[in-house]
Image 1 (tube, rainbow, N blue to C red):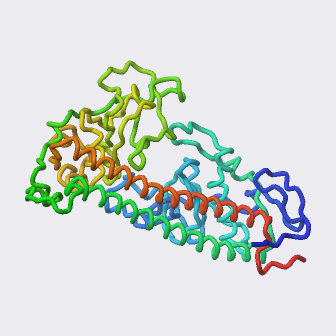
Image 2 (image 1 turned 30 degrees about the vertical axis):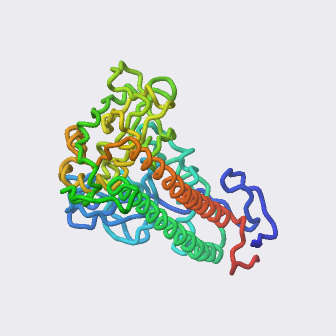
Image 3 (image 1 turned 90 degrees about the vertical axis):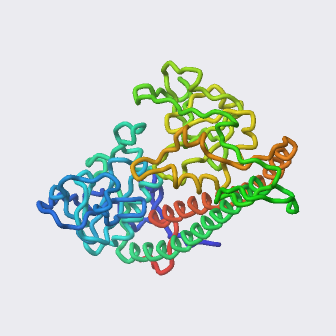
Length: 435
């Protein structure tokens, strides 16, 4: 698809903007926006929070998340004010508020000097500076502790493009339409991934509870989530098939740079039933052998802020052998782990976690893990047949999921690129005529 360009461009001198239309201006943020700090001085206003989905009302009655003792010292937000979480440039965000209320005094609230400027055009500019890590490059602090901040001066001195008011609105309208289309494709793809994930779990659950022979005689397992099992299978508690133990506790002071200490495997190192090494933590401290993993161990997430992630697991391979495992993880060690790996990826945790977890702590203890009862084929031959069957099925499903995950990555990159090209004038959107 061909795109229309402006007739003439000039060098902006700014890396992320590059060449921009010759008729555009380039102004520092402080000449377009001003920071406000209007403290409420009273209770009773709607509390707002900056999330990755934008500025949203916060339900302070739920008791969830970080709550303040007194909201009278919060700052006032009016409709169409920009609110920025400048305290964390990795996970923070900025949005133009659709709500009136109050927000944390730690956030940055700012307002347009010219009410005729397109709020949405500049919101695309600000959000692009977050997602493309432009603000991150201006930050200060300790990024490893999630505190990489954008100070007031570099933010206010940062240059922004200044198209005409007509161009600003045309760009915003065009991006609204195009990004909505991209987001809809992403949502559909995510739903498809979820369906494939559920299908994979159902395939595994069917094989590890019913076996592969549809004509085999069955008996009642007396366990709700399992139902009938082959008559020649047993119900076994995990305690009789191996042993479990919890992981290593360490302090922030023990953390060292990548590769300079011992790798500590955490929940982020287990993705889709496999070990990944994209988000690693290393420590320099004495570590007992029972806090290190062996090849063939099952690494299981035992505690997480998201209960649905508890129970996710992966088999330890040679690359990870000798590593430590963190306090929110546990390992299960036994001779049947190649089979138990699939059992633990079935619907088993969906059933058991409701009985193990409480309202105050989401944790799978070693005692609870050992008490889990599972269907167990008595012969190695049958277990191996199930493993081979599930390896093939899961490989096919995982390949389909990976294709869709790559599609989402491409769509996200395309959206980021499209926003960048539009807000910097690399593309002349429909409805814009040059003077």
